[in-house]
Amino acid sequence: MKKNIFKLFMLVFASVFLFSACSDDDNKVDTKEPVKKPLSFKIAVASDTHFFDPSLIVNDGKAFQDFLNTDRKLLAESNAILDNMFDQIIEKKPELLIIPGDLTKDGEKVSHLNFAQKLDRVKEAGIKVLVIPGNHDINNPNAHEFDGDNSSAVDHISPREFMEIYKEFGYDAEAQIEKGPKLSYLFEPLEGLWVIGIDACIYENNIEENYPRTGGKLDEEHVAWIVEKITEGRAQGKEVIAMMHHGLVEHFPKQGEIASDYIIPNYNTIAPRFAEAGLQFIFTGHSHAQDISSLTVGDKDIYDIQTGSSITYPCPFRMVNITEDLFCIKSHDILLNSEITNNKELREFAFDDINESIFGIINVALNSGGDSSSPINQMIGPAAEVLMTMDPSILQPFATEIYTNMCGGDEKGVLSSFIDPDTNEKVLTYDYAKAMLEHTSESFKQIFPLTDLITKDSGPSDNDFKVLLKK
Image 1 (tube, rainbow, N blue to C red):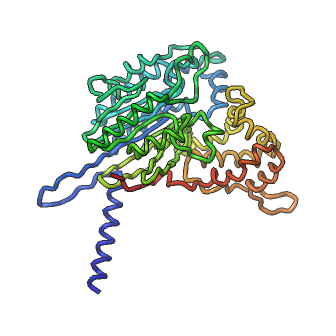
Image 2: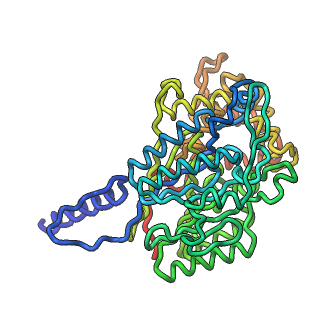
Image 3: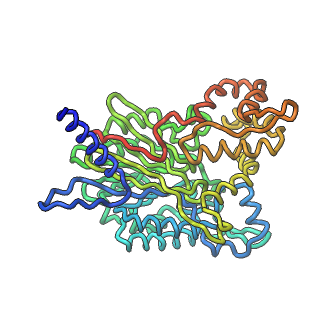
């Protein structure tokens, strides 16, 4: 009996310890004797902030509203959202904030300059900050301001200017351990923690081609450098993490085929090399969705931790705690409730925005790049044409639910329904859509069985995640 009571006590003690190790808040230990402080890091993660400086909305009017009608970003609210997010992060007192790209709407110089000023406030609160560029940030010909019915070009920035503006946030050559290819770097912001910032963006010919590339890539030189740095760090006993704007591990089945711009080419050979070298965690963004995916290579696991956009539903940021044995993540909503959000909580306001613009979002997806031969158009084009014949009062909540579920993570399936006027019975919209799509296209029918996997997350928890560290 005593042995059983002792075992129960130890189990409860271990559970309390595990919970406290994953808490966002600092825990004070009352002890009479000094204890050696264990290795631990507290990190905030934000992504795809897409800050649009308020000065670039010279006069709100048709030009800006037309743009918003086909976009999913809360650009007009981005200034207030960013300030509130940084207030929350400062209050949580992490040691480090990392932002894996798309800092600005479209790389406007004034947006970058004022975004860096906002980061100064975070740094002055004692929090170190590291950033890397996203596909929107450099050499972007879409850098514009809006004035009534018109929009006009404003200054964008070059890779060199990016390094100058963000010198204090990863690009100080004297503070870096090493500069890598393009705008990649190796940094040790906290003793014992190496961060590899990876620039996989394609921006060299954007201005000449008048087209900002969405996709990314890593050539062999770049991959070899990253593998070398992972290996060096692990050999020195460092905890090594990485951040990159584009994905490294698929976040849903066939992502590499149907949404190739959101994951680097050759991911299926590059990710195993990173894992074998000892990288267990990489922080990504780009897709505006909360999702954690993993890949097992032999006895090693690598996790791609994708963080959603701060100005797109559900407007999240993450807090990460790393101890000697445990890695924990908790997601948080940015808190904002004011006239700017129609006196609604930001999460609700962002949901309503998606719902109002969902048809524009679908049209943009179908016509992205104007390439009717693209995989995503071949796959969903015929299906979307059929779906768009549905009653809008049925299709709109259905499409909004699928989209917001993917953005929010931890998808549990599509639950929207409607009352069939002929039978007066409730019908699940998902089942109804399936029946409509049976005879659309061969390419869609081939992947239709995978839709359940897309709408029901079978991977790790996306918003409350913990895993043991592998030495």
